Length: 163
Image (cartoon, rainbow, N blue to C red):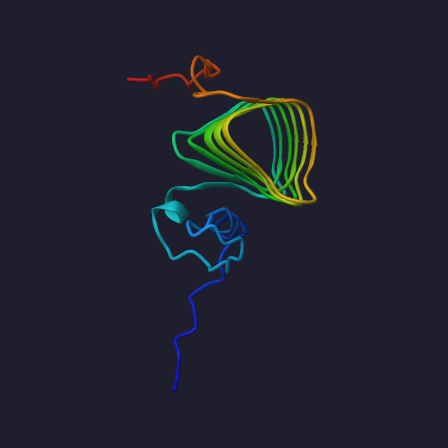
């Protein structure tokens, strides 16, 4: 019997998203399956390991970061890969960290995976810290940690308006 070979291997971004799904049965055993193609992969913005950004990053959707950012990141969902280094604050509904973050984190759901290194305060509604993760700072539970946080003002190129 023949099976169809997948068109591509799942990215680290897809595997990280799949790995953060918690089983509802209470069992801690979980098999991570590659995610099927969906709007997540087509709508997600990916910052590669060879890219350094100096300045703030704003997105209405999902952002996967494997490179370096020196500035604040605001998005709906942020996934920090193992090779990523962020110096600045993170603000999103969902934040998954496998790399290094030095700054304040504000998210409704924050996950520090085993490879993560976080130095800074975390404001969250739900926090998960895997064994092996490094966290130096304080953790504060809040009903809505992203409320009242002002997004940085980013000037648009001439001729473009925010309409």
